[in-house]
Structures are given as C-alpha cells and as structure tokens.
Length: 227
Image (tube, rainbow, N blue to C red):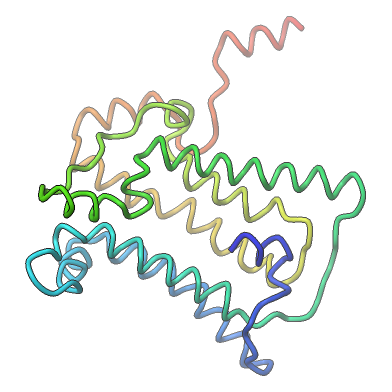
C-alpha cells in the first residue's frame, strides 16, 4: 500500500484492458469500504464468527476481521490497473518535503492505532485471547493520546497519507477522493456504535473533542492575536 501510493498508483500488477479497467478499478475501491463497514454491523459480526469453524469463531472475530481487511487492501493495491498517465512528480527540495509529510502521516496513523488499542487494530486480540483461553476484552473507549485532540485520528491520518504523495496521477486522485470521503463518513457509523455502547460518557467526550479538525483554544487564539 505504501509503495503503490508513493508512486501515485502508477505501478501495480493489474492488466485489465482499457476502458474496462475503469470499472475494475472502481470495484477495487468500493469493495474495501463496503465490506469493511458491513462486517462491523450486527449481521456482519455474526458472519465473522461463522467464518472460523468450531467454538473459536467468536474469540477470533477481531483477527478474522483484520485478515479480511488486509486481503482487501492487498487486492486493491496489487490488482490495480494503472492508467499510465503521470500528471506531476515532485523533484528536489519539494520531493523531500512531501516525503517528510508522507512519513509523518504514517507515523500519526501508527500512533493513533496504538492509542486506540494496537491489539485490536492489528488483529492480535483474538490470538492473544485464544492463547490465554479467555474471552476477548476490548480496550476502553479511547480518549488519550491523539484522541485528546480529535475524535477520529486514525481516519484523519489515513486521509493524510492519501494526499501527501510525491507522484500524482488520475489513479491517485480517484483513490484519494474516494477514501477521503470514506474517512469522513464512516466514523459517523462508528460514533453511533460508541453512543450505544458508552452512552453519556461518549456524548460528553463528543461535546468536548472535535471530530476531525483540532480546535484552537481561546488562550491560543489570544496569544496569536497579541503576537
């Protein structure tokens, strides 16, 4: 994924002839957000538990979810058919500035994932629980680290990785627009689940912490105004 986006989706293994590649690439984009969100619904969760035969399906549900998501992303970035059109490629100092921003976005994503509970994000919770012969215990509602600044740092960080690339093509633009829309809309469903699970505790958190754009505090605004 990192390599494919670094080169603006201009290098991949897909070889579908054009214009049919447009439909194939569109389906590759759609299959991830649709399935990724559906498996988080009640019916999707029940399906996850049935994918592993025997009594361990529920315990390994988070691991199954992570494996499926990884396979979906692998399919998207490995089977993409490049258009062969390169609009712009960074050079010199601009290249290194963009690379630094791109690396920072990935580091932010890693940090946010750990703040949310790395064992869940990486799919390790299922294996860990199975090895310990206990029921999976999910981390508490994340409110520390980057979650003190915005409510959806994982989605914001991933969106930033889409736009801080040194090579721009029609392929990268299509991917960036589609997945940025997903990163802005999908958390609304997540917050609905959190409201049901945590009740007033999440509602208070939602009132205090902005959704995706950090809030400039009054003291900071006054300091900038005086400067």
